[in-house]
Amino acid sequence: MKYVIIGGVAAGMSAAMEIYRTDETAEITVLERGEDYSYGQCGLPYVINDVIPELEDVVARRVETFREKYGMDARISTEVTNINVKDQIVYGIDLETGDGFQVSYDKLLITTGADPVKPKWEGIDLKGVHTLKTLTDTEEIMQDLDEGVEHVTIVGGGYIGLEMAESFKTLGKEVTLIQRGEQVAPIFDSDMADLIHEEAKQKGIDLKLGESVTGFSGKDRVESVKTDQHTYSTDFVLLAIGVLANTQFLQGTGIHLNPRGAILVNPYMETSLKNIYAAGDCATDFHRIKQKDDHIPLGTTANKQGRIAGANMAGNPLQFKGVLGTSIIKFFDLTLGRVGLSEREAEQLKFPYEVQTSKANSHAGYYPGGETLHMKLIYHRDSKKLLGGQIIGKKGVDKRVDVLAMALYHDMTIHELVDVDLSYAPPYNGVWDPLQQMGRKAK
Image (cartoon, rainbow, N blue to C red; front, side):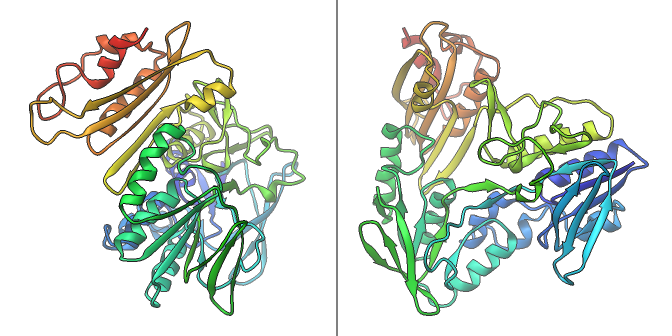
């Protein structure tokens, strides 16, 4: 059986290894547009600010490992340009030589990920304007920072923008963050985002909210950022305004995409085309609370979907059970966690809902060192089933977000939180966990 995988990072290589373990006769070809395989993109901000000492530390396996140890035809610098779905042939270009190539397949997996959005703004190609996704991007950013950069401007206040704001600030740079909307971290509700704004200002981040970037100016290197309201001097720009699924090469194949270009898949990671599967950031994921396809590109989802796609391709049927949008981020002294629906999303979906908010201690009040947890739960007004939660604080956020994720996965009500047998010792918790206290107070 000839397996071809387009994309060699999280989803692609999770699938490749699952095929390798399941089908002993597999012929596996991997076509990777970049130069690196199987690395942790989420660790890159921490390489840039030296929390992770070496770039190599975020690499799980080098391409040579897949070739020499696992016998895969693992290629680099190969860009796929077209697929003949009738004859089951993949066409592409070797980016090093410029030569075309073709590879036939019995089963094909598309794991091409999502590329950072890079609008056609004036000056977008000036030196000093960067995006962050790959190891190469990371190296270029680090080299550029060493050229005497003093002021960094970040365009976009999502997770990458916030993580990089902290990263640049810890390197001693002056940091301006420009966000088109009225709040950073738009996956949080505005009342929770206010806590993030406060932390940013306390740490010296110059927030510019409600401004839209229109372009950049400079001679050879970026010197200023233009918005619809002002012009700001800078000598380094990071674009972090979101990603789009890398699926342009699929035009003409007839494959079904969602409105933003992500590949529609079923629970077995099958696409609308015979013998073609998709997984990771280029594919949709079923949202368990919304009960419809969504597109939430996260590393956890990519690895799960890749494993499931590989298993199904190799004849071991597995189903992807869906996502809850569970995520967490470190932002200076705060941890920002959320799962399920925000209040804004519940309104958009016309769910009848109630909101419960609370400020609680991260562990037993009499034990020293406790920190305040700012908590928000959203639940269905009629069934009382949990719909989502947002938690921000300095300690204990991860513990509660994961408890909520498990509760949402199993369709629990806010009142059923009270009965869960959670761990307790004064350094870690009170006899009633803050989530359980909220369950007791709910209507």
